[in-house]
Image 1: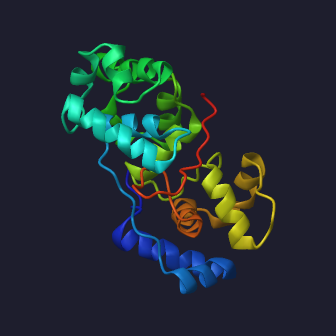
Image 2: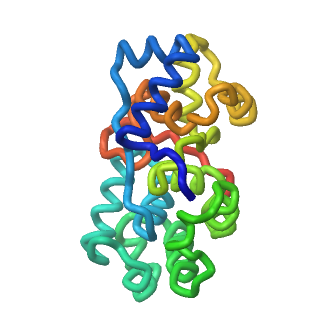
Length: 223
């Protein structure tokens, strides 16, 4: 697929367009500065890291990830993960359920059920369908991958608790909107909803896959 990317000039242009149409975003950018690009390399390791990060603080997820890399090598590959049993994975800090889900991800990558190299050529909803079909993954996981790994500029993971909190802060309201309500509220930001998500994470203080101490505050409907 060919579309503006969620980094560099593409991100800068998207933020400028958002600031023109939404005064609250303009004020936030002026006060806190622009969010940094948050790209990760596409592929198995990033998907696995998204799985690891579910429902954990960024600090805890980073610690488990570091142990996985020490155990399996960096970057973590499907074959190396598939070659060890769940006890080895659990020794890194993964629970039994996540260890089983990690092995299922590796199996799908190895047998072609999840065509990792082809995801970049698929439409957003097709990528969501492919990833959400895996054990332990849902829409949130797929949308995070679309944003971080594929740089899709109009993807907004409304199930993310940090985004819901960031939106409440942006608008100066006390109650976080529900995911369903938030998806409707951010419609006016299209086709730059992914860039807007970076602004909201910036306001909240941390995003999934960051290394800082703030909570990732994520929720995945597949769990």
